[in-house]
Length: 313
Image 1 (tube, rainbow, N blue to C red):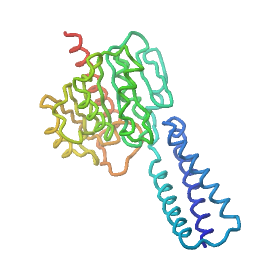
Image 2 (cartoon, rainbow, N blue to C red):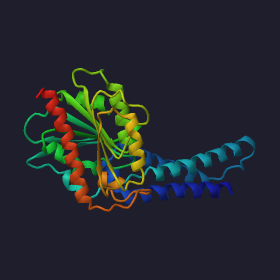
Image 3 (tube, helix red, strand yellow):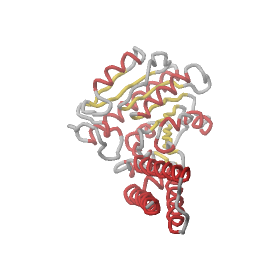
Image 4 (tube, one colour):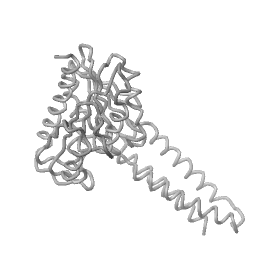
């Protein structure tokens, strides 16, 4: 009986990996390599377990049977996690926005996407953390106008699509782009929460390239962030079913009193990127193109404000 259970679990693991590759191949290829590596590890482990189950072995008894049962439960949990981690895949117009042209140069590496003005030397940069399990490419269209306006945009590819695992992204961006003298940190949903923590922790810590702005897309800080010494802009949607209007309103008490709150009438949670519908979200009542244009315009406004303030104008 235990052999058949082992074989069943092994086949289930392989089936989940096949399902992920069929339904999310582009983001597996373009995402942070850790998820792809774990999928390979899952297949190898399942293959080894299946082959071993075909070999004649004495019946398990005592502690060996307990150890086997624990292994089966752990394997089922692992399979469930691999399925849950399947990312939301970027859609148009984000994919088109990933192409370089006369205005913006797009560079993609295994761990980041960089949108840079094709001409000129930007002094202001935006480090933008994606939402949980969202393909980093999904934000290319909404953030591209910032690069067109003359700012550098860095979108980290988070390990396993979890922003907390990319909390060191600002330090990495500073090292990679020493020409940037003012940074704005931002993010969508969970990415914005991590960006808030980054801005709070960075307050007064880096005089050479300080965090001068915080940009929140359908997001809010995890706790009291009133000590953030930066321009703050919160952009939210009235039909957001995840970061609800009530959540955003409550976040006012945890942000500096000078923070700007921009509300996109009719926008849902998934309208802050281009990755399709998201479970638990509300029903948008505005065209996605219109919402994206408003979000992009507000983003450029914050970056312009930071740039002007840095120039002392």
